[in-house]
Image (tube, rainbow, N blue to C red; front, side):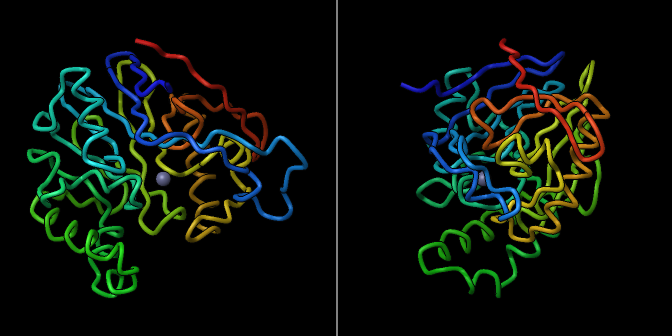
Length: 267
Ligand SMILES: [Zn+2]
């Protein structure tokens, strides 16, 4: 049985990384451009996670996972109820990040939360042309999501403060309007990088293209800025799909070359 949650403490921030789906063994070569294909050793455990933080007394969720059961179930194990969640910070709107926002009856899973989302992402998501372009299996969900979320969203336009000590940082490329979040602590910051890098190799080589990004050249631009920022601030990084629990730090080695070190910060 795989470990489902990993509790951690980072200075005054407590958190839990939640495994929302089983790991998949994927080939790194599926994401790498032709010029960076690896000869062997390219298989790795692609994790699916979301994250809960208790930050300055607030209950916060970063993305919501794939279904409305797994994340609330994990929260229950640490005595947090869906009603307690005050902020849901969204990195982007792929289903493994947002499908858990709605209950089967179409109501909000986190009824008291403000849902923080980039304006660019929301404009794109709520554009009738975007909804129309989705396949018939996805369209009803996203149509409902846009309608139901509408009354509880907090839009961020450009880098800005979401709340005390929480910064919204646009980091587009993986998807239109993809964003990451920086949390101030009593020490170095905690930085949730969403889907900016699927594997440490993309953080270590920020100029390498992830060919599955929606806008690969923007992904590279955003990653260069993000890893430079992370290394400079000595941030502890959380990441959705890096092998579980996906926590690490980046050190600058050279121009466009960084070193990823996994961090064990057990509670
Ligand atoms: Zn994802």
